[in-house]
Length: 71
Image (cartoon, rainbow, N blue to C red; front, top):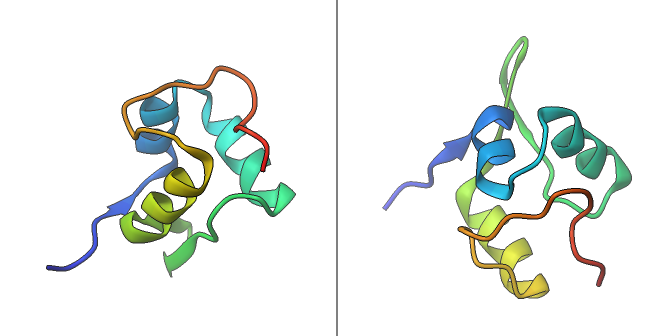
């Protein structure tokens, strides 16, 4: 089954944070790397996100308002 690719908007909704927070997490290095699909189009692979969530005990339906859980 192929992976789904999430936009920053979808991830912001998934985690209950702003799009800026998603990018801040990505630049901090403790969030899965985005995949550049074309100019101006970056997405996050579902399987990468699921690994990240499992490592942190996150259910994809849970929300975090400011920062992702620490290691």
